[in-house]
Picture 1 (cartoon, rainbow, N blue to C red):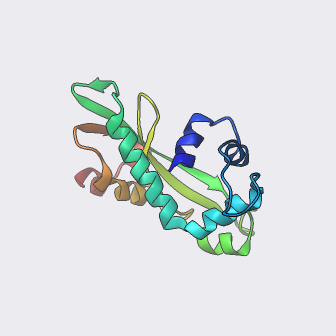
Picture 2: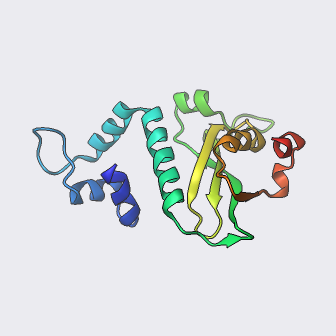
Length: 166
């Protein structure tokens, strides 16, 4: 938990610099942490642990903040992005990639939809999936975690009667 809080205060530093600054280390080891140890530690934690940490912190900070409101409602937005990942067979299998008439493109890609508070751009939730899955389906995953007394704004790319209905 403290390392994630530290990361928010020292955004300009790399994760490795932050770990050394906070003197994070493996039990019985030297003070300096090798960059590979951070990756190995994150892998041991697993995806679900990282997801749960993010969601707990996002919810906590959202509740603590005093955001500007409009007619008593917090203003939120949903937007999507596509990330390129390392070109490995595992990533191609897990995430897929765009293709053209000849072949797949050079990098596997991950689709992400973010739910954020508008005045601060603070993320309150996100959903990830394969490149081929639609942003609308990912946005539907965020509905259950939408805070009360808020207004969420979507751009026209998210127009879906099912999404509006939910």
